[in-house]
Image 1 (cartoon, rainbow, N blue to C red):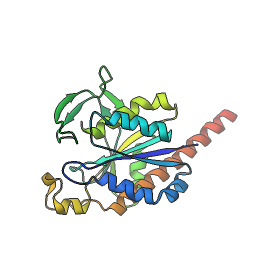
Image 2: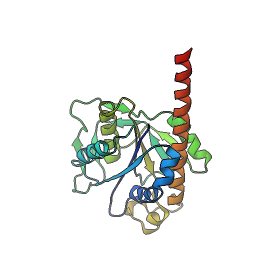
Image 3: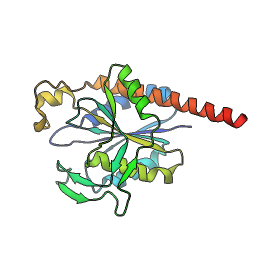
Image 4: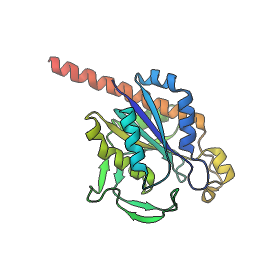
Length: 229
């Protein structure tokens, strides 16, 4: 059985976090999402705290025991959805976390590898599938150096120990239109940027998951046929 954990972050940079809003929408649709995924779906929201997030993530994984982890977070500079395929071993917070930490505060993991590659299958195909639904998406090799990158690095480190089938990626979300209108975060109040509606974000996640399940079934069928040959 495949099981899914979707995570988000709480308030950030002076206002609400669009990833937490998205989790709220998906949670209300949990039953339909689980039917679409064809397996259990769990949710977790983390405080934007660079020192506490590792323990919070470990607790969520221990509780949900997922095979797939889709981490989500806010990226004020993005205008499209971004599926991250690289995490770097660096914590350098351009915006303070919930405890006021800012600037370079060290590696994610002492003596860890400089980079870890996302393990979620066929990210390019998934981005294309989301874009085909009318929601612009692309694969990215730059998850930044804030908590979004940190949680992806931690997930890719913890995954193989939790379950050999464990895979993870990070989905960066543009701001919501109402965030841009309110200029929260304040640095984002730029003309000509519309943001992305919550309905479109939720639709994108569904398309992403449908593509993943189809790709997984195709791969399982291929492996089964090869074992019979």
